[in-house]
Image (cartoon, helix red, strand yellow):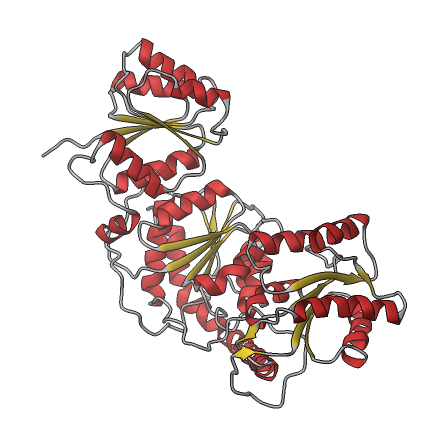
Length: 518
């Protein structure tokens, strides 16, 4: 049998080392880890590796000095070296590395994906030896996570008891080889390294998508359609507790299992997460292989199965607008509409009252309106509501107008509608940005009726030139939203009645987590 090849991974960031090590070991390589260049030299003296993957900027000894040492002291000009760093590719220090007399060298800027690392290692070093390099999906299949048949979702797969999981036992547990379903997991964490680490580790068994905060997650949850959510708590824009509240209001994801993975030490947090609908509370640092094994245990305990594919016409909203429902569900009527659909996102009731008077009582004909005071609801429903115009109060708490516009651009949600800032109070920056970005003034609704109406009509007429196709009529949309609210209310009542039963039923699982030495 051919001897397995050994890869030396040198990086001062433990999470980055872990990403590379998990991917390489899954492909059959042996891996040695070092925290800096000096430790790397000691590792080479003990045993010569077949390839080196390393960071460029590290304490004690950087990548350039390390490469000089292996060339001068060990005469290792034939050693393949993959340099991965956050330094710009055009930086002088990168040029110094590429000019070194190494026969096999490559520089790649961070962040990198596990598949790239495996591909580059196979290219520069060759197959692992006794096991060929595999992609993440092949590695997952080898570990026993073959794609399962889709089946009905188990309604009881929620709400185990909440206790704090404290780390115990050895630091490097083995991956449980038992077979389990391949889930779609949404990981929410503001730390890029944590997202990358969990994406790589969980990707051995599951399909993983990541979001950097709760608002980001809400904007993508309908597209991802996850079976499980793993969320940090302390995050910018929208923290984990706010995120789970929003998820539990979603008609499709009201019962989805949610794990919290956090470094927070507040002893009251586990109870808070439980009361909001969390399923398990886990503490960082957490070995990713432990997390994989934990997911297997949870899946087995609650008999969790992947969600069935969403049928055409299924609801996908993350909330409901503050508008009255129509008389009853109408048939979907795809096609071009002559009406301009206007969505207003404004937390200020006084603003909304004034704007309604302008739009609904004295506004231009051929318009239909949706209203919401909740930023999360508005952002989560942009795709479903299909507005032609969005009037946004730039003083909305949680996301000012400039941040909202930039978020739409980053998430590619800004196509198909006109955006205008409307309100009673503005900063200078709001006016400057509105002129530069939209080519229009902010709309101050405290001015004279004629002037306000003219400004509103100008935006509406701009949108009228490119009215989008609508998947649902307004009556159908509002009727569905009312139905969703009714279902959410019923679900909350049902969950409240079942909470005690869930605690008892799943107490054994959390107790197992607390006791198991792993």
